[in-house]
Length: 288
Ligand SMILES: Cc1cc2nc3c(=O)[nH]c(=O)nc-3n(C[C@H](O)[C@H](O)[C@H](O)COP(=O)(O)OP(=O)(O)OC[C@H]3O[C@@H](n4cnc5c(N)ncnc54)[C@H](O)[C@@H]3O)c2cc1C
Image 1: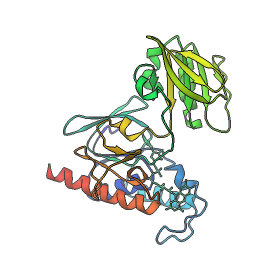
Image 2 (image 1 turned 120 degrees about the horizontal axis):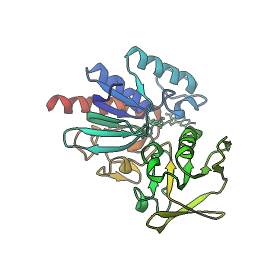
Image 3 (image 1 turned 60 degrees about the vertical axis):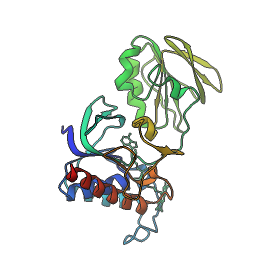
Image 4 (image 1 turned 135 degrees about the horizontal axis):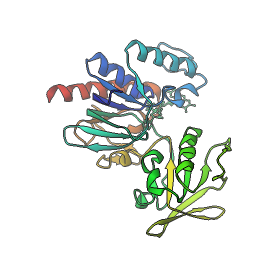
């Protein structure tokens, strides 16, 4: 697997797809992170009426056209969720949920927005009994009880993996079709989590609308991670990354595009910004 590229693009919505295509056209190597199915926000749209040249296109068709374009540009998607980015001064190191590490000289953040507020206590306890990555941190809680909160069925494999390592897994799926698991040490609950508290040095309490659960770690597995959690130096405003009209962020070599830079939330705005972000990243690399 290629773990190093000129530009890392995080997100496979219209912004990330457009950025990757332009960057490759300009001769740069690209690592594109996201789902091979692209963004659910494309395929779930019944009919899109304002994408130029494709009147009333169903979202599934637009997604298929994007995939075809990526294939023809020979761009592969690395199916890994990026959980942390480190600015190494001159290059960026990216950590995937698979625990794989990647490296790039420039970065384009195109992660879209998923409305979700952090739980009270979440940010304070992050890295101290709150984790966003089961693969990375499971072994730290070997033989102990953990809680998992997830907003999509995509995370169910992580739950099974945790059950192999931990003594008990309390699972709080925040989506409609609640799963069942063969492993007896996974308990699926329909409580709504409300707060995380420090109980002792080695224990956290997950508070829900129905009770309290004392665990070694609370794993919070969301489809999107807040931009300033991914890269803490990033300047944000109300959940959006602050950019100028060249899609430059306050971090040298880091660009952002699409919904994550702010409203309006529109396909063509996301794709247009992806194009600008890629051209700016290319200019940045060529000036180096
Ligand atoms: C049902 C629906 C209908 C819509 N209809 C229209 C319409 O008709 N016209 C219009 O202009 N707009 C429409 N929109 C809005 C449009 O979907 C968004 O503006 C657009 O998808 C934003 O593109 P994006 O690339 O910025 O982000 P997204 O499309 O949200 O893509 C971001 C991608 O990044 C991935 N990602 C996030 N974090 C990470 C990470 N850490 N590592 C790896 N990958 C990550 C996500 O999984 C996602 O696939 C609609 C939205 C919905 C939900």
